[in-house]
Image (tube, rainbow, N blue to C red):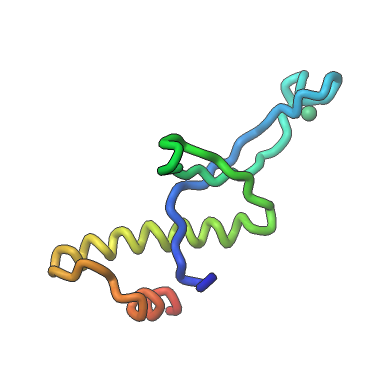
Length: 96
Ligand SMILES: [Zn+2]
């Protein structure tokens, strides 16, 4: 994976119940927060979520941010008649 590769979708933190009887979460003290990556699944036509390991949260966050910046840039490029942002340019931008 290249460092400037974007990730669509969004990250959300959620508190969860594990469902074990007698666990603190059954008394309302939920576990978490856990981070999930929410993304539209085109094949199944629904939103899916995927658990993001704590160690990966920072890089997911960064990649989602890059994707959003990329979307903004793409609009600018479309406006001047480039239909795709050249990958070399994206690389240059995100390595600043
Ligand atoms: Zn629990």
